[in-house]
Image (tube, rainbow, N blue to C red):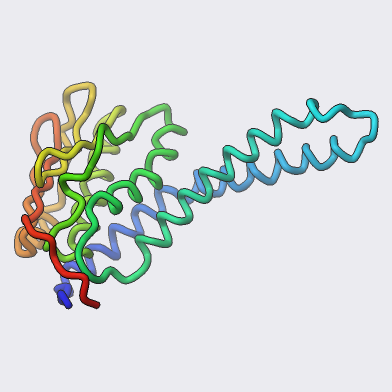
Length: 205
């Protein structure tokens, strides 16, 4: 079992709190949207003279919003559980995107994944450190650009601005702690790169 350094644990907790704070409004909004649309469906379907088509639009909206809520809730639960075993970098990236993409969309921005992330699926790095690296990069990129795309190139995750300039700022303490954990986190003019150590890791608890 890989032991996570205390500094990584503390920095990850801070990052998770930032993510939770960032998504709180959008998650509450989606839940409220589900409730409002279902109430419209309930009241209209209770009227015998009202055709089913009168509630169809609201039922579809409720279903779509519920899907968003479920994706966000499942991602948040997964990231909140204690990490163990080999880091699944592809799954971790998709969990962060599931949380932060709806927030970006609500602000008229975009956060998406381009292509497959299979090349970074598994790594020998500490899973908590991987969460810290990916979370930090996506938060920083989302703050710095309107259209952000994630793609895997070999053992590196590239988080870049589709508009060109990114100019993201990365916390020095996070960069230093991740370097000690074998992860290189670097900010460049148009992208943030995260290079993970090669290796399959272990599945031991």
